Image 1: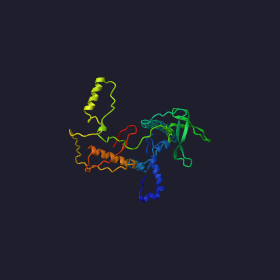
Image 2: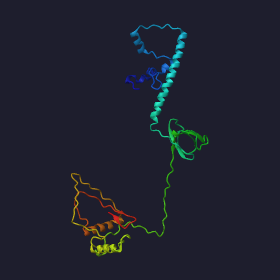
Image 3: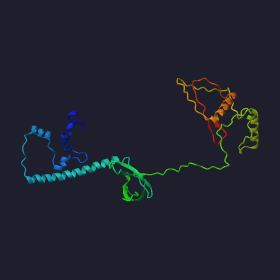
Image 4: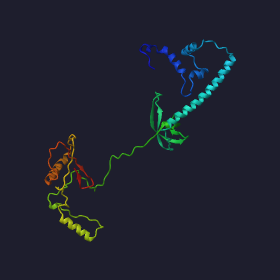
Amino acid sequence: MGLPEKLRRRWDVLLPCLLFAYREVPQKGVGFSPFELLFGHPVRGPLTLVKEGWEQPLKAPKQDIVDYVLGLRSRMAEYMKKASKNLQASQALQKQWHDQKAALIQYQPGKKVWVLEPVAPRALQDKWSRPHLIVEKKGEVTYLVDLGTARSPLRVIHVNRLKPYYDRADLTLLMATDEGQEEESDLLPDLFSSTKEDALVEGVVLADCLTAEQNDNCINLFGQFSELFSTVPGTTSWCEHTIDTGDSLPVKSKIYRQPDHVRDCIKQEVQKMLDLGVVEPSESPWESPVVLVPKPHSKDGKR
């Protein structure tokens, strides 16, 4: 509740006024104010008395005490019946909203779970304690859990205070390999032959489904167009590919640091590609660094 600056030091004086205002307002759950449920009639505050004085003169009602007590008892019974009915309807509505995202969780005996327990020095502070074992399912939403403590080793706990526990996967820190296994080199494999004669495709394995005549035709094609069937990359002037970047700003990536044992190899491969005419020097503001990605199970590599 917010109070003006002048009244903040007198909050203890205003506290009864706050409680009076709270007790005369009907509660949403039961449909009656706390004053009505306690005394059997609405509270008559200062504003109510002023209103009644304006409408009609105040007169003391003449009523017998016995009749008043009997009427009070009947009103209290009626109030309690209506309040109980309203409370059940309100609780059913709250349960309906709460169960929209609720799901029934079931645990099997022997399953490890986390248990939400209050911290010893602070009753209002909870924490998830170490994993415990489910011993038995007592009800639809209650389980008998082995807490492993001397004071209360077994306790019935609601499912809302349980959370499933998952074991960590085994972490392998060392793996033994066969001594005869060939070690893979981090160096970039040589993709380009030094001469054109060494670049011819030899020992090509053809499919088994081909006939003898088809095999001969393929071999003749390899020999006739040996420049095409080569391990050395080539170039062509029959087509061009243009990339239009529009008004985009040039992208210039920083150079990646390469290991010392592959720097010379990268320089040699770049020089070979320059000699073959596959690449050419460029002064474009667009820049992408060389990235070496070796393939462990192949003789090819990516740049």
